[in-house]
Image (cartoon, rainbow, N blue to C red; front, side, top):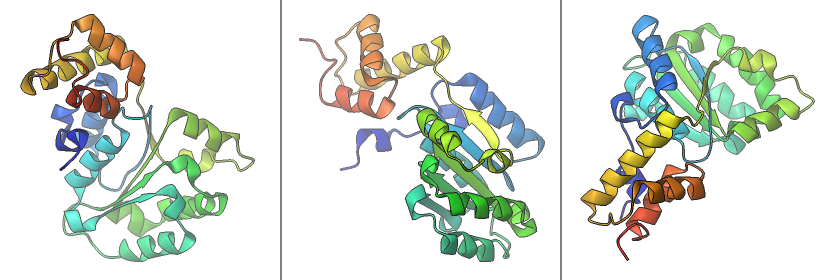
Length: 217
């Protein structure tokens, strides 16, 4: 069985829940210069949609077999060199898409090598690179003795932050899911409390709904 949050994961910006400023930012970028050849640094809380946005971007610019998604701890110098060799070849679609999750865990040597990687002409022409991390994770990267600013300055910053509109959108979405599952027996205020308990983590909230937490007593 597929987890409910994977089954319901948005596949386009139109389906993405909340964060209107960030969605507008990405839409504008796509309409002006496109997502191909860009590097993104996406931050936000756990379960807010960082990986979802990364996959939407990746699937828009790349064929499925030209997408690679890894955890930052797997990112070695050899991996970066392999990516560079791959980017020497034109992609079947718009770009090769490379996703690095938990990017605050990237090692110092890899960060330094990534600076050169992102400046390579083949990478800029043929690749889209997407880094995701939590807000706290990004702070840890900044706290290291290594100056990460030159690397981060090469990325388009997409910072997910909860606002009133997003919380309302999340609440409405969760209530709609509960309705479809015939598990909705709670008030709007109770859904707001669920979001507070989950710290906005939609994965956790969806699992709670599927487990019957919001059905009538």
